[in-house]
Image (cartoon, rainbow over all chains, first blue to last red; front, side):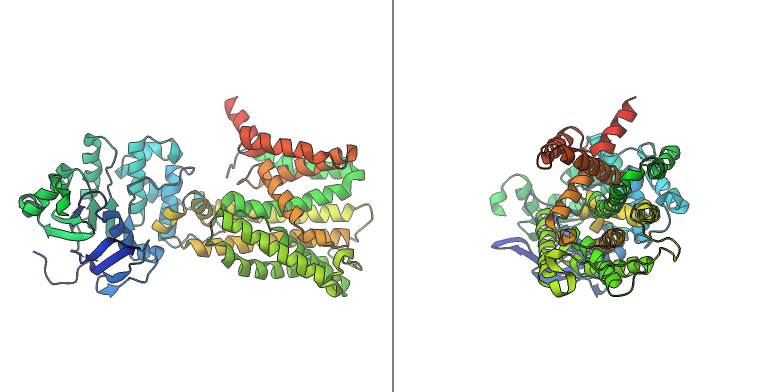
Length: 254
Length: 311
């Protein structure tokens, strides 16, 4: 099981209060390096808020976030991305009027620290262009490279979400319902791409489809009303009476 | 950017040269169009690329104009160093103001830029002992351009000088918008949240582009001061900022050329229509604006592009 070796990403009593509402309440979570970790729970449990805290979109009202052994709590999002934390969004958050290739180029150029360069045209960055096309090929998006993102079918836009995250070459990938809104057959494909990422990439994903969760997760955390209800291996979670209660609709327990 | 059709672009840049020979009576108006085109381009960089709305861009134009004007009025009439001085002052001021602008949303930005414009206008108005106040700054005496070409009454030198500066800065700005930096500005316009998520330091980029936009506006202002050898308070005025916004939208944002086309349409229409009736001409301008917003979102160039594609 998890050794006491430093976790890839860890939170300590992390809380996020919006006025009276405790969206996230004292969450201590530990992601082992290379984990395939699912975050589940009913709507409003605080899953997306937790991701916003991990990525630095929100500043927690209490608690800490550690990357390796180091606290990154005060770091803004773009600094955390530089340290290898990338995310996708539940609702497509893309560059509607850029082509798919331009979007991915943008992410690659930023990763390489070229984003402020003004003296050479983007089209002359051949190496980065090659990398972008290779990435699009692995996501079967190569045919869409020169299509404006807004004109893509929804399912392909979901893949662009993932492409943009992968272009930052993350060591930790946080996926907010990556397969939301796409047909079951395709969602297996999407998660298949994710599962096939290098073994040392740490992955946390939010997912509502339990088939997908049990198929891809090696570890599951159940979040209810901002708190961790239980964490464990998939078979433990499947047997857990508290989880059953929540998922059978007796949410009054929560 | 729409790179295509180099022949059309070359022809476009030959038009002012043709006008120089064919319309010698219009060189003063022509210079003004070239200068305001440069000014409009500086706003397009902010608005069309980075998505920063501004109703106070004349602050930087006027600052550049007064800097160049004051230099020349106090004994330093060398044009090119005057431009550089104006650029430097506008850049410093733009850099400072940028911090007020980068964080806000559209409405906040409109108000802040408007406020900065008003502040500067009133400051220049009050400091009449420096600026000449409502009478304007006179006594601007320019030396020869490059030590060779004196400014003449017909405006030949002024026209070619403005043309050269516009073309040069256009070439630099085109590099900028085609670069990774330029692409990142479009990214910020399209989705700031996602730019954060791919690791871009968004605020720093906005500071950079706002400073650049202010600098170019300052150069345009300096050109006006030097070619007309006069600086009026209207260089800082709200109307100048508002007209500029109209020109950029009419021409089509986010393509640099749109700024030039919009300026040309606006100023020629203003010259022609106000010749017929000095008050009434804004009626047609208003109508044009409404039509463009409803039927040609990309402005004149956007409409032409749509027609070209449909062929």
